[in-house]
Amino acid sequence: MREGYLLLASILFIGYISLNALMAVAVTSILVYGCGRFIEKAKKTGKSGKGIAIIGILVFACLLVVIKNIPWAIKFVGGMGLSEDHLLRRLLLPVGFSFYSFQSIGYIYDVYNGKDEAEHSFIRFALYMLFFPKFVSGPIERQSAFGKQLSALRDVKLLDSSRLWQAVMYILWGYALKLIVADRLALLVNVVHKMPKAFDVSFLVICTIFYSFQVYADFAGYTAIAIGISKLFGINLMSNFESPYWSATITEFWRRWHISLSSWLRDYVYIPLGGNRKGLLRKYINTMIVFILCGIWHGNGLSFFVWGALHGIYSVIDRYTLKKCKPVIGRIFTFIMVSFAWIFFRAEATSVAIDYIRAMFTNGYWFNSKKGLYMSLGESFYQVILGFVFIVILMIIDGIAYKKNKAVPELMSERKPVIRYLIVYIAVLVIFIFGIYGGTYNPADFIYMQF
Image (tube, rainbow, N blue to C red; front, side, top):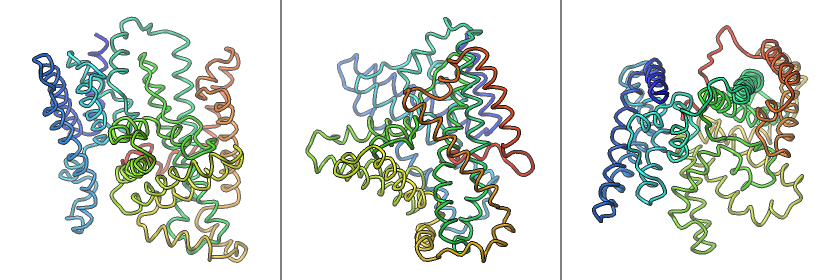
């Protein structure tokens, strides 16, 4: 019964944000569900179901490639008069397709390899595909773990104070990350990236640091809100971030950054390619393939390819460099390398990223002579200092979570009732005072919604 209500709520939510997205995920759910049942039936008759699995995986992999390249194709032919709200554009680019395609491919692969049983209940499977908190930008769930939680929903107490406190803390933490940290840092990032040649080295370096924390707080904020909303219904989504900027190596960073994606790439790309079982050279080749695919998935421009390739190179040399450093040194260099790669991720094109990097080394320091420019662009020392203050606070909180090996909202929800109420009061107050909202602010502008 509860699965039915949640499925109805998910259908209404997706239909509200995009009817074509609802149609796309509905068709996908039917096809993937049927594929799983066909593989199961084939195995019962003594066959492997390999042909069905290959066809299913190839279909969704090809669709993913085609749909991810549609924006590039539209841009290449001059836009074809297709605005962001044009019906054809919305039909060709369904919301959330990347994330539930990954779930589809993973599900088919697991059923074929016997890691998961085919789901017999279509309602339960459809809810796995459509569950509204994770629909737009993940996390990328596995059907086996998600299905078990659905089976146990009937035993979930709706008014479990412990779970509800966790949900509240996750939602508050998510909004704090988004409104206080990510959107405040974006004020400077957006201005500097529009005209990097107009700023000196100090502002370019600050902007690079700010964007590193903007993209983290933005996506981690979205994920925390999704996890919190899910907990209200008794469903635990997997964590996507675990204090990534406290990582001492690139390898550790990717175990803590976008965990649902990195673990998916490991299980369904890296390991099937041979992983580290076929020698050192093959391991490095597989690593490069995985990270280049990761970059291409994020976008079809050369800049995303470079971003992925950089992380592949970082990972290959990791064992010879950072793993031999002291943790403090490793954390500093890991952050520097990750931040450098973010320049290509943020830039509209590779040439823009190269110009930005060149400016970082050639623009010099002349802040006083251009102070009027900074102020006219809406930025001031106050905003920069405030940005750094919130970055320091975020790193301190993340550092505590890193040592405790627990998510920040879970640590907060474990406090005594008086402390929990105080945390909620302070969090709401700080969001109202320092949060970026109102006016031209668009709450739907999460960075990872474009992927």
